Amino acid sequence: MGEGAVKLKRFFLFFLPSLVFLIALTAPGGEYVYRWGPIANVGPGALPTYVAFRDATLYLYSSPYAPWHYEKALRVELLFPTELYIGGSCGFLPPAVLKPPPGVKWINITIPPLYEGSCILNITHASGWHSSVTIIVKLIDWYPSSERSVVVLKGRGRQFIQVDEDGTLYIWERPVARVPVAGCAFVWNKSLLLTESLPYAPAEPYLKPTPWLPSIQGIRRYGAFINLNNTAVLYIYKASCPGNFSITPSREPSLSGFIIGPFVNLGEGYKPDTPQFVKKLLNTPLRRLLILNGTAYLYTLYAYLYTTPVEMWGGVMYFKFVKPPMLTRDMVYIQPLNTSTPIEVQKGIWLFNITPRIWIAGPEPPAQRNLPEPRGTPLGIREPFYLVVDPTGAWGGWPEVIEVRRETLTPLK
Image (cartoon, rainbow, N blue to C red; front, side):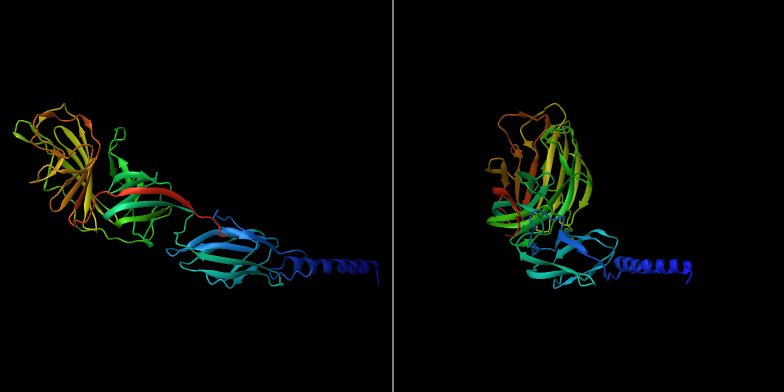
């Protein structure tokens, strides 16, 4: 045998085993005849603070109200360019494949509503290598979120509750408290409520108090209806509005049947200084709103009214007096036709006890007629008047806020 043939034989003796080794090491089938160590490292992912991972066990929650999404719940570091198979006994996790290139892979987990129990998640390789994680799920009365506001209310009748992005709590548009957690998921009596999302913007930003009106952009308020009977608890979660729906009432709000403006003599006799309105209609899934920009001789009126699917309707009115005061014996902001002076049922809240009953909260009586001495009309912007019209007779006025607190979800023990 010549010297060249010997060199060629030696080359193949060394090259072919090396080639087999490299193919085995990098092949997608991953036989790994010559490998050592694990194919991947499996551990906890980017978990929220209320999720625990101990001794290869992942402790999760489920909700009766919605699926609970755990993004990047498990972290799989793939060490070789091969495929890993995801399976096991968890019915909420469909079979999947983790594919090359090597690096960090994530496993997302979604727990369906009302699920509770335990199961095994297996991560396997064709060579026989495997890793497993036990998943334990507990069902709790909690919308999928890390924290919530707890609001204890005492009152009677239908209430329209709102919270804005800054945490101000409104009842029939009137601010009553601040909450630590704000969002669009409301749970009442173990039921997830239908909610609306509506921006509010200032009509004149530099006025104090600022007249806030519903708008197409601005600070969002999230709203829902509850039926209150004595004392009960409302839970508010920082989450998106659930579901697509619309129960917007067909009836449009109107101020017909009301006297608006103080009585003065503007050369045409002693009568109300009634504004002329520019109107705009706006709908939400829960309400039909009429936004009004009114102009009278003495004042500008920023207002909005809304009808609801619970028979009641409401409104907010900001009076900005722009002319020097005039004398009047009938200082009226708003008053139903053919009614007498309203009854002050509690400080800052008046009732026109007619049918339908009309409640008004504001800085002074909404109507003072036949004053014994003339008084001057105001100057500047007034605190808003909040209007609630109740044809049912079941509403007991703005409820009392007994308690507001934050609750934070903690990991399972």
